Length: 229
Image (cartoon, rainbow, N blue to C red; front, side, top):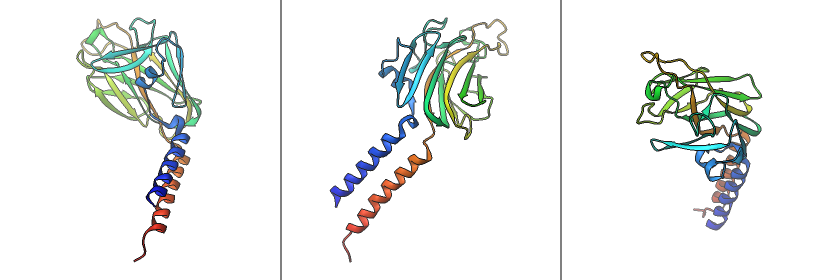
């Protein structure tokens, strides 16, 4: 009985894992491990990533490693005029994405940096603006969580959860927009730049259905094999 149940669990898990594909959280470290650095394209977890305006480059600040684009003023970040695109095999919704090195100034002479994130195949475009060491605003109303303070000792890292609601898209594009100096920093002129930490799509309903089917199958076998009183 134990062997049969174990086989069913393994089979169900393998089926679900194979189906999830692009519905897997993808991090900057995954891209680095896939050899993206120095190239302009890379495929990870069923998502096709491409860099525009230069090749992929990694950057580590305050223990946080993220991926950006080489060739810009910041080095290893997405500068104005550069972008990173993540293309999905099918239209899916986004659970969250995370960015790093987005500051509000005056650290490093930065303006209040602005990240523009577009949900491809839709009209959904959101702006993430750093407004303080641990505060930022997402223009579409999703929940913003600070992962590392935007200070000279921190990494200015953020997660935006449920950024586009239930709207599904064919991919994401990350760009930098010009920002304005924050209060008390009229001389700040270092423009927006940042890097990508992770992209987390929402699992498709069929994925949940497969997982439920696998668990039901295991439960059915266990019940059939249970000794009768």
